[in-house]
Image (cartoon, rainbow, N blue to C red; front, side, top):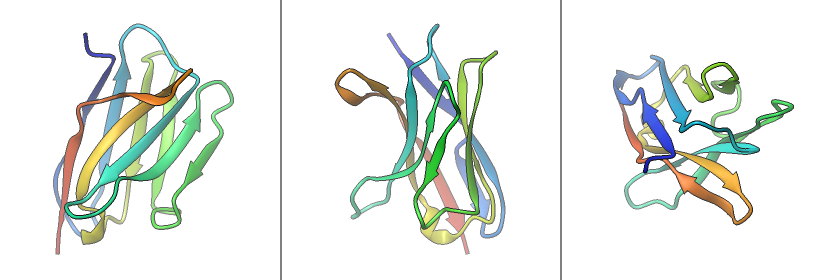
Length: 115
C-alpha cells in the first residue's frame, strides 16, 4: 500500500540538473515537503509546498537553485534541482502532511552529484 511513489534520482555532474517526482496514490494531501539525508548528517527539510495555494519555502542552502511545484492533473509533486553541487548528494524523500505531521513518506531516491 504505497501512498507516495518517487522517481528521478540518479547520478549527475556538478552544475547539472535533475527533476524528482512524487506521485500520490489516488488523493492529495494539504502540504508536501522534500527532505534529504546525507551519510553522517541529520535529515533536513529542503522545500515545502501547500497544495491549495502553492505556497513554497526553501532551505537557504538550495534557495535559487531548487524549485518545488505540483501538478493537479497528475497529483504529483516535483523538485526541480538545478546547478547541483556535490554537497547536494543525499537520499531525497517526499513527505506528505497529515493530522499527525509529515508522517506519510516515499521510499527515498538517491541523488549523487560528482565533482
